[in-house]
Length: 398
Image (cartoon, rainbow, N blue to C red; front, side, top):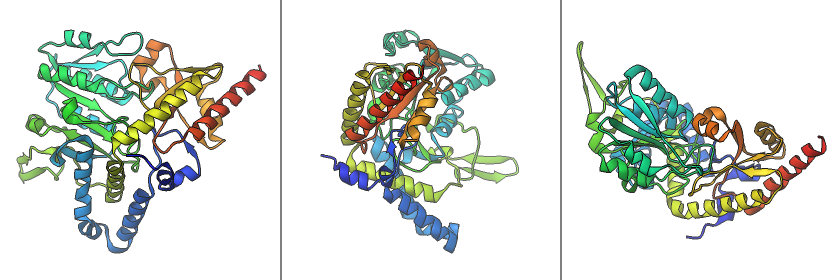
């Protein structure tokens, strides 16, 4: 399928106002998403929240099918959460940990994930072990397998880190987890909607992602995938009447299904917007959009590498649409703020978000340009030109 870039940009009102390279932070939504959220909120205001929800019941339920289609799951394996971090937390704290259990993770783990590993270490007495990577940032899979023991209960991996352009070899990690019958949690916050993600091929037991990034949905939404065969082994850390039933003064019953991760109360306006965003991507085909992202991000890296004073800081053999770089003598936040004044949206990745990786590489912060399929080479050329001009201006003042 050939993407009609002019139509995609016409469907995205924000492209008329800014050059947006902050898609790994919060991407620009399509008009369909904006319209249905606005429509639903207006109806809530005039007809009542419960009443409107009942009218939209069938459309609301379409969300589960759209999410399942995107990652090759069953719709009874999808739960709505408020964001990817919320999803990871719910999964981690539903596993029945014992003191001495081992959690294997990587050097590029995201801050929220690792904080909760440390919390489990503090509260449950688990042991957190880090699988090392080589000098170029590639995880040492042979070393991971050597670290497997009867104590390893979970392998937890960030699919695409926030700060380095790297794509983790999720399928190979899944093979190791499956071979040794170990639970596998994939933080797919940056990967779903960005690259093709197939939970059957990856063989993960859990996946968590968010709406606002590459899926181009609204903020405040995300979803979990949990393989239905393992649901009966989990115990949610909190209960909600959507899945737990109050029997009497001393007893309750818990349904062993995906709803253990959901809350009864949620924003149905945002949910409908999220569903529209998923449908839009499913119609385009993530295999097609990923090819476009690869093309543009490769072009951006090549242009940056040819520009004086710029160092591309991406690592790993396989790289994604997140391009990170530093500019000699210029603080990353200062550069991002300067570009913002020219209508160019970037972001920074600072040490606190990926402490292990940043410390290993001696970095305190990098600029992050995250490419999406609606971006253009012309926008990239403008970005590189402005970065070069800012560098020359700063150098002239020294």
